[in-house]
Each structure stands twice: as C-alpha cells, then as structure tokens.
Image 1: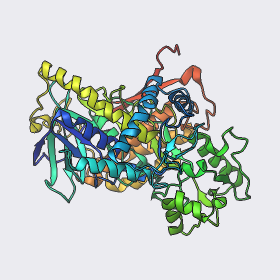
Image 2: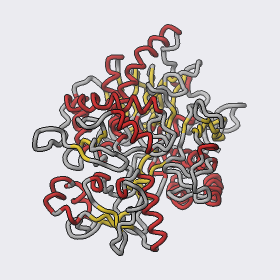
Image 3: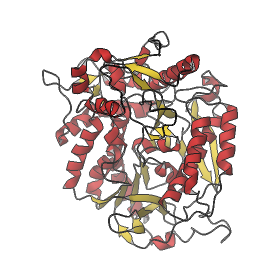
Image 4: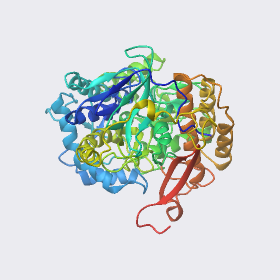
Length: 562
C-alpha cells in the first residue's frame, strides 16, 4: 500500500505566494528568477540554498558553442544516447535554445574556463562527437553556476525558506494545484508543519539516488518530488531508467551513501579505463571506447568485473602529470588524495553507482504536468530529453532551458485560470480535511502507514541487490515482494519517516516499471532479456497512483503500431 497523503500534523502556520518553487539547484533557481514577474515567488529548499545536486556537478554543461559544432550534431548525439526513446521535439528545444541559455549564464556572471585565446574552453565527454562541454574552475562547474544564480537571487525579491521538506500538494475543488504543505526542520522560521497557498507550484526537487546504497547524489536526494507527484495524481514516466555513473571512486565493499564522483571529463581529457592487469577493456566494445555513452561504459565495467572477479576497475590518468591534475581537476585530485589515492602516481579505483534518473514527473515542453497548476523541471521531471539514457552534461542544460520555459507557460496558464475563476487558492485547512486515518471515511485517501525510519537502509539494500545495474525477473520479483512486506504504520510523523516513505514509494515505482520492461535498453539492463526490442518496447512506461496502488502502463511512441 502506498499512502495518498503523508500522515502529518495539521499546518500550524500559513504563507501566501503567487508561485512556490521547490528546490534550489539550477532548475529551481532559474524557475524562481524567471517567475518573479508573475508576482510573489517563494523558493523552498530542503537544506541550504547551495546544498543540492547542482553544486556537485563537475563535468560541465553541454551546448553547441564551438564554430565547428551545431545544434543538429548535439541533437544527433542526444538521440543516440537515448536509444530510441527521446522526444525529438524536446531534444530540439534543448539544443537550439541551449547556446543562448548558456550565454545568459555568462551574462549573469558565471565564469567559465577560457582557453589561451580567450574563448570558452570546451571539452568532450561520453557520447559526444564534438568538444561542447563548457566547464568552470576545472571541475567545479556546478558550484560556479550555483554561485552566479544565487548572487542574482539575492536582490531579486524572491523569498526563501531553507531546511524545509515538502510534504504534499494542496489542490482546489477542481483538482488544480493550489499550494503545498511542508515542514521546516529545526532551523529557520517559521518552524514545524505549515502550508503555502499559491497559484502555481514548481517541482525542482532533484533526484532519487538515495534509494540505492551507493550514489553520487547528496543526502537530500530522496525522491521527494516524484513521491509527492504520485500522491497528487500526476503521471510519472520511465522510472526504470536510472543511470549509473561509470566512475565514482570505489571506497570499498561496504561503502554507503554519497560517493565521490570522478567526472566523465577525466576520460574526455584522455584517461583510460583499465583492468587490474592493465588492459584497456573498453577498446573493441564500442567505437568510442571509454567515451561511449554512460550505460555502455557502466555495463562494460560491470562485465569486466564479473569476468575477472575484481571488485572494481581502474581509471588511469597518470600520463596527465601533476600540473594538469592540479589545473584541470583540482576538486577530484583533492577528493582522491583525501581517500588515500594519488591519481598522479596511481590509477583510481572506480565502480558504477546510482547517479541520475532519466525518468520522472511527466511534462510537456513547458514543464506542465498532468495536474493543472503543477509544473516540474530538472531531474525530477521527465521532459523526454533523455530517453533511456542521459547524454553526459545535458542535465544542467535541461534544468536551465526548461525552467525558463515554465515562466513562459505561466503567462498563459495563470491568465486562463483567472478567467475560469480557479486561480484563488483554497483555505489550506479545508484542503487537508481528506487526510484522514484509514477507515475514517469511505473513499478517503489513506494518510497513515508511514514507513519506519529504520527501513531506509533495508530499502537501499533491496534496490542495490535486485534493481541495480544488473537486473532480472527473479531479483525484481524478490524486490517487489520485500518492498511490499516492509511494515507500514506505527511510525511517528517526522522527517525520517517521511523520507523513508518517499523512498519506499519511489523504489516500488522503479521496481514495477523495471519488472514490466522485458528488454535491455539504455540504462535498464535485464540479464534475462539482454537485447533491445523495438517491436515490443519502443515506448514509455507511465506510472500513476490509483487509490493506494501503483499502476504502470505501456504507451507506445506516437505513430508506432506495437
């Protein structure tokens, strides 16, 4: 059973806004800044403003900025990486609007690295046939972009609540989004559970990597946005496509939580993947060898580990020399040395870890979800850009481009809502009257059944063991059974229980989709169905919460007959 509403105390305070944005990565910051002309904007973030995934982005942001590059070539590489499931219209938006969007970041003060002639220095990453990755601070691109956007936010008039966990969506009688409930955690004012009434809600909550034992995602990435959207009745698509980054730093068999990332840009600059005998095992497995799309490299590493019995593979950049490591990858160099590895003199042990969700809350080209008034952008969204596997460094660009498009959509959507008389948000207490205990009223949403916080590690174990890089029917059946058997009820409402419940909801949805898709495509690798099947599976899996049960249905691509 999946709760339709999180069990929580009644709101003890309220706030009003025209637009509430949830999340402070690149997508959330851009959405908040661009939506400011629509009135009062409130930005809610789970930790500190700069604590999301954007600040951890090392490699850079992809865009056709070079004279010998073009949006068409960027489009072709993106479609190839997505293995037949990208929405070409969405990709075309990304690659054509991307260059100007990056130039807009530069105008805001984002300082990208420059070459000797003063032009933006561009590098290459997996799946790209051109040098089109702009970077900053060597390997601190996300931190620099975040800095520039936060500087712009400071004097923008956008209000901010930090340390706030979003709980559920408020909806009016017509089913339109009308605000959120949230809990402010310990620091900041106001404290405790409250409600924000708003004419529009933008989800920019980031990823769900914490559903696995080892991930490159920060601790706050517990799938809160996807879980909220499911409870609100929104459609969620393609959750089975969880991308595992090929080269996080291997910290040992028992490593848990956020793992240090060794950026794809290290391979883009010429580092080689080798096994423990020194063989470059990716050569011959793909025309781009180490620079193949991420799913190909992750599978290559896992296969070589199985063939050799080794617990990790090695990334060799010794030929860079100390000066290049210190200039180009200072953050990675420091992280490796912190963990006792010196890349200047020895190869780096690496093993794939959960990195990015290519699926998410389904949107149109302007961030609209299936719930009127609810929008999504960034990793929490499924715009159709990534298909079955995200192309390296397209994530920052997607957040930048599609967050800006939400502001465009609001111009028309809010005007239409006002015309229809549905723009005024309801009283939040009335909106929560249906959040009753099980059996309190026929047909009422089930608000009880929070997962015990102690189950968090068990959820992660189940997902890592049975729904990780390598999947099969037997393991996925076991995962579904073990997730369903985890006890609900008895847990006191609180941050740990809400996060565990969100993780359980998202894990259950991932497993349901992965069980249904009986093929190998992109980042979804079924050992029992090792081949791609365009005749049966060239389409999307769309998940919804019906009552308290997740339902997943296959939707073929438009124009396909299967």
